[in-house]
Image 1 (tube, rainbow, N blue to C red):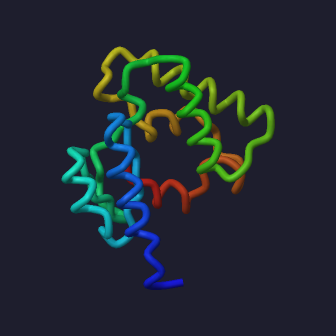
Image 2: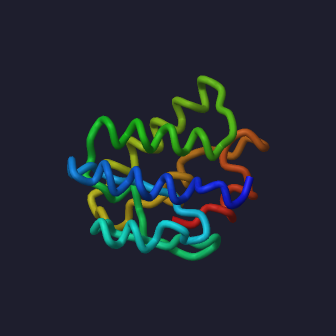
Image 3: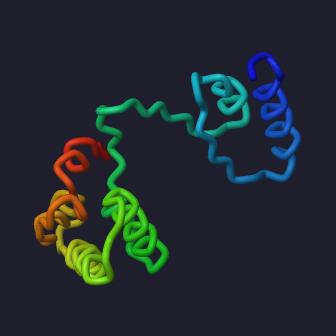
Length: 132
C-alpha cells in the first residue's frame, strides 16, 4: 500500500508522544522520517550493508542484560543452536568479556573459541556478512 499516509501518521504520533520525553528507537526506511527524528533531537545514524558502523556490543559495559543480548544476537545469527552449542556460545561470551583489553573484545575474538561444526554455528556466510 502506497500513499496511504503511514509515515505521516507515524511522524504525528512521534511528535505527539515527544511531550513525555520518550526514548525513541526507529528503523527508518528510505530516510522518510529523518527530518522529524532530527527535529525531535534524536541521534540519527545511517547504516549501510557492508559498511563498518563502529558498534562493538562486546565493548559495552558488562551487565547481565548485555550478556543476554549478546547471547540472543549470536544465537540468532547462527540460525539455530543445540544445547551444547548454546553452552559454547555462552562460554565464548564469558571469555571475551573477561578479556583485559576492552578495545580488543570483538565478535571475531569470540569466534576463535567456538569450534566449527558444519552449518549450525558461525557459518562462513555469516562470518563474511556481519559488519559491526
